[in-house]
Image (cartoon, rainbow, N blue to C red):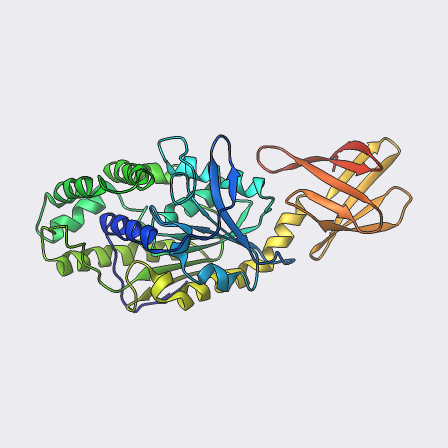
Length: 391
């Protein structure tokens, strides 16, 4: 693990909520592209061009943050690969979705969205603040689809109830959590409905020591960069903090450094960067730092991602007992060969669909719920011929 220690800070969830509300009202929203994910529509932005061997970068915003809150970073990254950014249900232009707005529900909706817009894996996920635990859970839920993670000053989902209380005990104010919770509830009453829904779920998770965020487990080892904000940003003027904020900040800083240092150490290619130049919205004050982190993970993941993904299609697919299509891999390309015929290169069209370069035909691979390939359909001249995978 590489650790670059400068300094670090953390906005409280309350402060993040307030900044998110301000960002939502201050930014000019981008054009809307609405996609149905099962009864409600999400606003999504897709830009850049998919390139062979380069994963798609998916952005997961902080609590209540609209698309515009990402600033220039998605545009910068789109110069080198395809990017997907969206607004969660009830945020920005997206329609309200089922409640509670749990991380599990959000992960399910994002997975459905990526399928609907025909953006196949592999993915590098970028999560800001509350988006941090979301991308962590997505990678744990769909480990074969994610090849890299970038945490942008994430919510500390590793915290237990005892960890949270330990910070307040250290600053000498035992009832700090209750005091701040009451002020949060009063302030959030004026927030947009979608922000309130997300904040309600954050509060529920916080009361349970974030145990619910860890239900999906941990993602497999993959390239990871964690950015921690190192510039103190006191709470909004409307909030009366019960102790000197710098004292609280120092105690929280120490704990975050320890927790996220351990998270970075889990990855063979894990990097923790602490910056003193930015507070919670690193991507707005230091967009070049987040862009660097994304490119670092892309570089580390790009070589391995296509090989791991393509290997699952390799096998023999008999259409009839005497005629089969054999699929092999040659570097970053899939090669098909029918019984008694010359081999042909397959050109990828989606996550599981490939076209034949030499003739007007298409192969659609069938998968089970875990993404394991079970068969194929050869579509040619208006006919669809099914073949199970036997080897």
